[in-house]
Length: 425
Image (cartoon, rainbow, N blue to C red):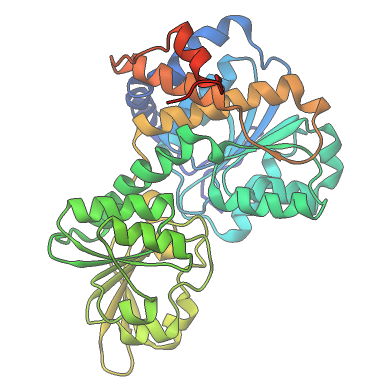
């Protein structure tokens, strides 16, 4: 484990990084006006007083703003990172120094990752806040006795929501979960604009290559893949999309992208990024076709989209040639394939994750989700729920206000017209 001695309340890489981390958090606060307005408002009434929130979400400066907003609203917090490579050690140190119970550091093993989750559960949470559902799965699979004391949980990302809905269908879910990912102010902003920008940022930090003129292959044209394709094209790349869903593929075609199977795209791409939530998107036969110097990365939640065991079987040597960049030299002909961030989320493992401005809305939804569950969770059945649409509009309206934009309002006559089925042409 990390070299920092364990204390009663935290385990981080280096507490000496706290000052640096605090400056990062303050920068994020200046870019997250919605969450800061919620902090100011609810610090007075403390609607989360008495709640114990266990969180498992990337430890970034933006997450720190969420944690401290939840705390200001009265909650007790215990936190872990939701990916072994996504924790920003200086931010974790700043939170620990401020008294937050946190167990997270960059570069932990899988064993250490789950140890940290177990530590967050020791204080018997009344609410859970998740990104990828590893925390919820740990409760269900390892500590089911805790479920009766949990009012509910929230889930941040597409992959986690999909799996939780499968649990709910099988009647295996033990408490209600709010799918924060399915709020429009999350998936149509965070997933598209956040993932697009931060994934390109991760690729550039890891490689410093020129994007213009490259053939850029995006696997998956959901919201995250769409964002990556959009930003790569904006930087001058020739973008190819691979898909398994006809409607998604057709959307990509009508947006002007080439669409083909990965079996065909593998020989053409200079840079590959997977954004599917599915395992084995790029496998042995694809690596065998790749051109010299191909760059491969993933922006999906789990690291199974690239089958790196297959790549290892083709490889005579591996070396770390740059931070977050490993060179695989193939046995057959000496071709080199470069894998970024060990196949984990390139935007968080090789960069800083989504910009603060877009996480402002996503984390406002998380905050409202915690308040809703604190107030209503005891009366909700174990299932996966979405936040009400009017809450989406409230969050979006707050965001517009903070950037100085205003919109029209329907008159009473227009509101009546919406439902007036007697009106004709």
